[in-house]
Image 1: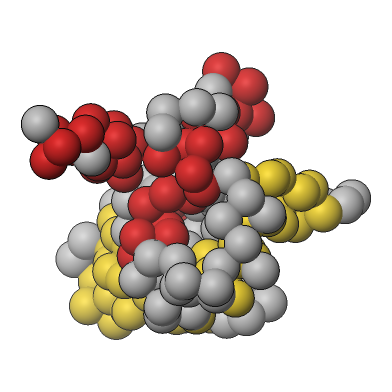
Image 2: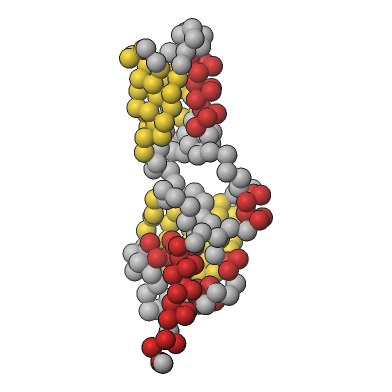
Amino acid sequence: MKKIGWAIPFMVLIALVFAPLSTAQEQADHPVEGYVVGPGDVLDISVWKDEALNKRVTVLPDGRISFPLIGEITAGGKTVAELAKELEDKLGRFVPGVNLSLMVHQVNSMLIYVIGRVNNPGRLVLNTEVNVLQALAMAGGLNPFAKRSKIKIFRKKPEQTELFNFDYDDVAQGLGLEQNIQLRRGDVIVVP
């Protein structure tokens, strides 16, 4: 019977790691409208029937790309659809009836950082939605000296930095699940 006692909290923890959580407020703040291009992303841009306008470009740290005929254009912060439309509009002056295709070849801008008392601190590339518990698992879990109830998540916003508290033990036991927020590009998890 003693062996079963640990199984229930363990199963709750596994369910939390593999089931992304989001609150209604988060969904309102961050609606899903398509992937937003960021610095470091690699884009494949091609124009039908014009080999000279088929390019693979990397978004520069300032969010800009360079493309033949139109020069530099800001790509960072725009969805793939918005950027494709803008490129098509600008190229339309030079290429009548332009048919442009834009694909994200490689996602490099979806980074979060996990620092402090985890087994593998550093930056993590997100290629799917990840919550705090999942990110901590990706960072190798907490080390024995971690202050499990004092974990902080920092999120940079245009006007300020937002701070979220995270109590690992509470969430692992199925309590305070609203703390297990979906992470966004640039979030920093600090494990003291």
